[in-house]
Length: 285
Ligand code: GLN
Image 1 (cartoon, rainbow, N blue to C red):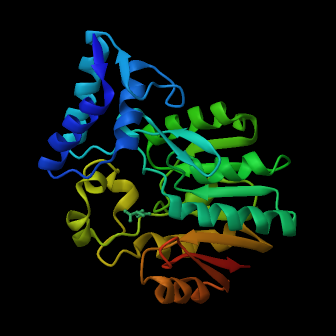
Image 2 (cartoon, rainbow, N blue to C red):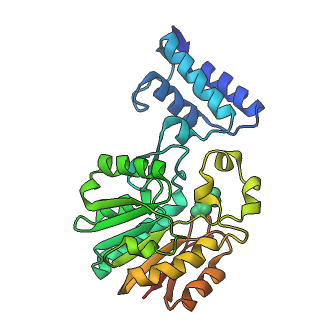
Image 3 (cartoon, rainbow, N blue to C red):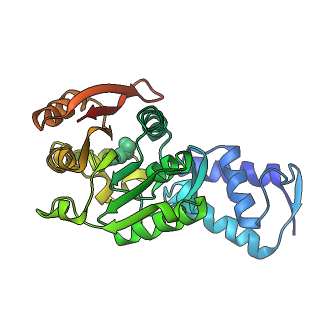
């Protein structure tokens, strides 16, 4: 069937907007290109011949979007830093704000010759895989409580070509013997732990509360539970002179600095995200 792209996009847009979903032409073209298996760069702008099956696939994607499913989770991938990462509802969607942590951790690793990296709560793997892809001589370990997330991280590590330099393991950092999982120390530890107050989760956009895993969001009654635990385990896993890079939630900076300083780490620096919110905090041992 021959479709007129402009009118399909306009119809779809008004259908979504009337269901309270924000959307734009780029997003809809991305879904259409995925449904039809066409490269977005070469997809026609005016008319296109597509099969009924492809059209039904597009319609199905739109019905998912109507349920507030975010576009990356419909497509199954999301661009982050320099690569596309596979995603599913088992992992937190990589956010552009987290690229700040990645960029600065890479700089610190290059300046200090850090080669052994640990990520606590690896999820899709977007943080540690991006770092390892830049630091060709580094190796790392990534831990997550979710076996499903670890499968996605493994796939991403393979696709991006760092799987020989990363070890992924399933473990819960709240376990008393968590540190026994490791037989060495690390130069750099990175983490974007769950940091949302349990009560605030229901106030988040449905794209987040309905499709990002609770395990990756819920930071306990004050949002700081994982930081308290990481402050107990991370200093023992860090080499002297090594650094810890943490993502934090809005307004958590002073509390997080206090929590880690009490465990003997030295606060170094913080970095703001694209909206000017303090988003990444670093400590040194
Ligand atoms: N940045 C995410 C959000 O605001 C939360 C991620 C996290 O808890 N680590 O929805």
